[in-house]
Image (cartoon, rainbow, N blue to C red; front, side, top):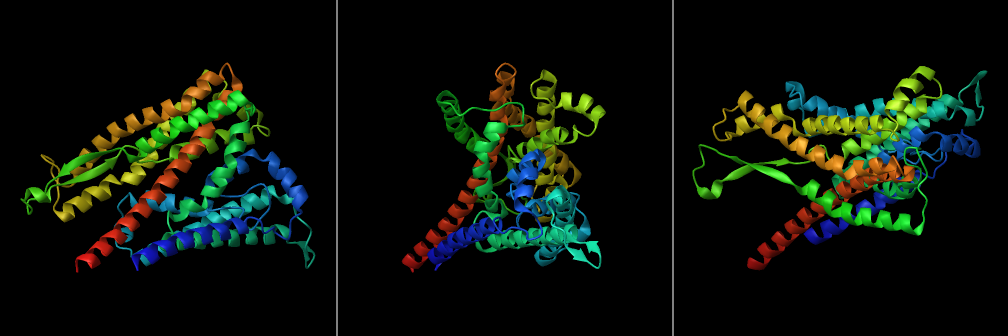
Length: 405
């Protein structure tokens, strides 16, 4: 029974990923494909956003938005939940799912309008009582596609393996050569034999480093006055990299934004573009600062110290010489800050060295966004592997129980 369940989950995953990829080839009927592809190739920001949201932004397709709205909804909900609001705390799983869907719809509308706006030169005239409604229809199709992506993501979380992130995996893998070649637009990485050897070595070293960072955690001993047996000892696991790959995901998009806007605003170009130029020391320092800030932000959202402190108090568990409640929250924050500084240092060491070398050899700077992309893939695959192992261990446990009986 359990073996079949595990096989069904794998089949569901493959089926949903296939459906998701197929949806990215269904062209929007109100858009001229050739003109749209011409303008989309020039839109670097949309291309980078697409790389990290599982979207296919090289063509005007039904699932052009990818799971971007769904990701935004989950991040916002997690941030609100970290505030430990009583009404949200008492919500059922069903109500939480409905809230995520509504938030996804909200972000889908915003992103649908933005994408349709960028497709304006390619829109085919469709008259309705003397008005051109092609922009409206394109926006509606994009919003509908976003909600289909939400449905597929929820279905994979329920029936498949790896959750919504697995839908991003194909696009992340496909985008690796592109992001290596073009990077942030500072230089072109040539696929020569020596350069490919460098990439191979980077990947070989990155995989164990990425896995080690993802697995690492500090185990804080927990106590419970109602449990005195040595067999009842437990701990609170505090992961080293609570923010996961989010700092890489958002920093790459953030560093593309100034180049997208600089063509229209000269003052913006003179001030901000130089600050985010990774061919300069100031740009590298700014990148380091962004990585640290994002690591702290997403780490605190993931940890939710006030929520964890309340849950520990309600369960009767406490840390040694730490009073339940506010002191427990401070205790968790203290350890979180220390671990986040350590993880930030590792993230900087992993990603910044190509930028330093890129000051002399510009093309090497492209390895930084490539490493970020590869790190995201590592975290997604590792999470899926953990879920698979959990399900497989559960299956083995059931088989052993049947054998004993």
